[in-house]
Image (tube, rainbow, N blue to C red; front, side, top):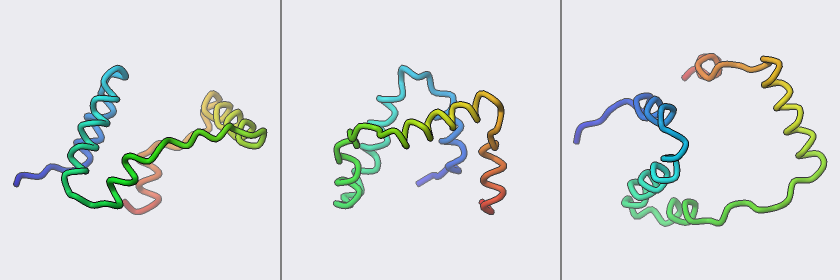
Length: 85
C-alpha cells in the first residue's frame, strides 16, 4: 500500500472549495470507518454539540475575532515548530 505524507492531505483540504467540504468530510469518515473501530465509529456519528453559547463564550469569540482582525495571530507552521512537530 502506497502512502503519502499527511501534509499533502492538509494541503489538499486547504485548497478545497467550501462547497465541497461536506463531501470530503463524508469520504474521510468512510475511510476511517472501514477500520471497524467502535470508538471511532461512535465519535464520528455522535451528534454535534448544540448547547447555546453563554455570555462568556460569546465574549471569547469576540476577543478572537478582534485578534484576527488586528493581526494578533500565529501562523500554523510556527505553532507546529513551537510544539516540535
